[in-house]
Structures are given as C-alpha cells and as structure tokens.
Length: 77
Image 1 (cartoon, rainbow, N blue to C red):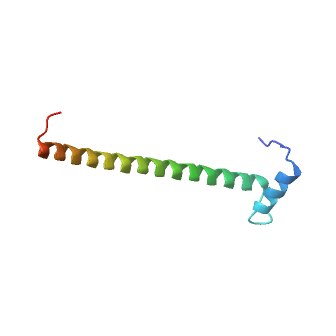
Image 2: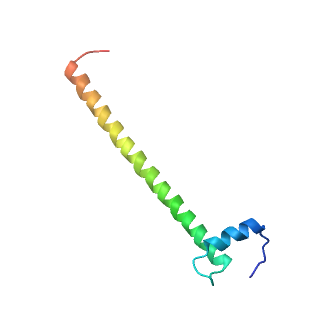
Image 3: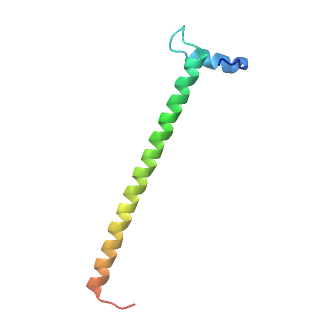
C-alpha cells in the first residue's frame, strides 16, 4: 500500500541533500536513514554490553585481590 505524507519544505530540502543519486526516492533515503539508525543502536548496545562485561571482570579481579590480601593478613574483623 502506498501512502502520501506531508513534509515541511525544510524537511524536503534535507531529504533532497541526503539523496545519493538524483533518481533516489524519498522513501529510499528514509529507509537508508532508518537502517543506519538501527545499526548504530545495535553497535551502541553491543559496546555497552562489552563495557559492562569488562567492568564485571575487573570487579571480580579486585574482589580476588582483596580476598587474597585479607587471607594474607589473617586479621579477624
């Protein structure tokens, strides 16, 4: 189903500047932008997950160091 949408002139001008070829449609431009945004969101999510994994690993290393230091000191709290 084809739908007609209304765009303000400034939005139309931006879409025109975003065209990679003269025969590219507004739909092509919008689909490309949506796909780019989805890729960026996925990349950000992957980076966040990786960052959290690294932080968790570092926290575990620190805990192990504290446990080792605590066992070496043989101090009761």
